[in-house]
Image (cartoon, rainbow, N blue to C red; front, side, top):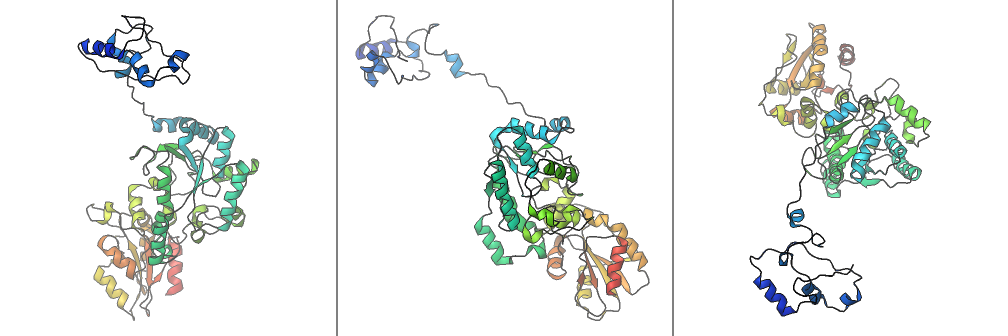
Length: 472
């Protein structure tokens, strides 16, 4: 629009000199507020005036009292706008309100609240159900996935099928090539079999995920309570993420949605079949929980689905780090100790924790004692020894069965012992005693200096006794 300004002294435009005199005579001087935007399509008169002349035509805000029809807003509306604080969402209450809601309703709520600042984390397994739910809401949605470089060929084909089925582009996140190179060059391609999966997962999964989440305010996962008995049994449908940071930075800046938290695995599969959703072909080969190729295998009938992941480690602590916020403090210390130090909560000796496996039939071995036992080539007796940490919940869980076993073996040619292998003793236990995670159980035969590691995750009395009987 054309800008027309009238002067209180004349109906004609002011000259440059008279304008200067007018400004200098106005007391007291006040700062000019705001700026004016000249229309791209001025009237003919305005087109004939230069830019400097146009500025001369505009009276400063303090030159005359503002009128009701003034084009200049009142100063109060510019200088002191009303500031309203953003009300914080109570996500614990929201989780309680949605506890009986359907996955579709939860998904719709998540997408409605966060729009383009939320994305679905897709692993290439049965969490394709999340994409189907998002599709059914009719709202726009984003999907990202972590390509570790170690996935099965079937998973890559599945990614392609999902993109074509829904007409979407998955946002792939990749690990840092320099970090992967350093890990593989220093420790080989399969170091996770020897010292735990945490380090490899940290490089290939956790850090790429951290980068992805820094661009979001919320994310959507396929976690279910029935997936992992030790780490996911209490997850809510929505929560403030306790581990990762979001777009605004800082702990508490990211919201985590778990729409299928309360859904059983069987119901997820019934939904996928009903909706004719594409699925990973590995499922038909016995795979349920699918991750990287070297760390995933099919499960047998009756086995829990997470037993196919990192099968050489404890069944109750199978998290790669993406959802480590599920793990309670004492469990986290266990996981941090798995290939990544001991965990500061207990390993530094600052916390007093009651010892376990206290029984007259269980011999407590010192560092010297375990070293001497390991050096002997001709022992009088065979030994069964547990490498443990008293704060570890999985060691605590097997205490009763281990003590019962010791009582059963009392008076036999097999001695039962324990060696506390956390803290200052952990590096020795890892390098000399094959410690991978707590608890680690070793059998020292009579006529061999090399101990035999108990590989099974079953720690009941009968399973432990079968191991001893097979070797003694």
